[in-house]
Length: 143
Image (tube, rainbow, N blue to C red; front, side):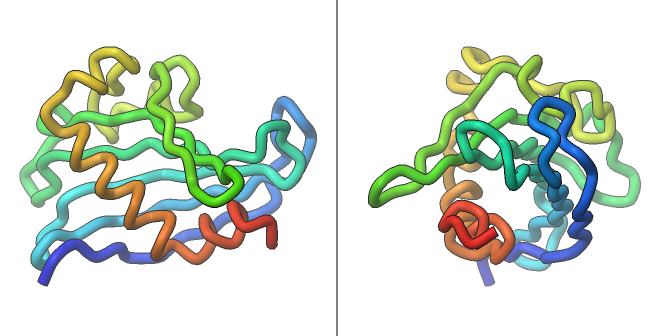
């Protein structure tokens, strides 16, 4: 069955605190073989310097009895380069969701890159840029 993304909740219109542009916020649920596996939040602005998508990817336990202690969050940015998409893991302080306890503890860059789940994070970012229509549209310059 594999990994699938549930495309829900897109909120447009919030002004960006640093550039004044229109910010789009995304909430996505990720399932592996039909079971909750991860959540990601995304945000981008139509006027933001650098033209990137900020993501908080939370992986771990998502069952009914699960708590945030069973999850970890990774702060990521994705931007479009000439013929590819570039993914960068950033420090928690650079994430708009650094204090969202629901996602689990957010790792700093060094810790994230050394964590055994980092390959899962990169797999998800590949899936996000290939399947999430809002992210693709923004990165391709259509938004």
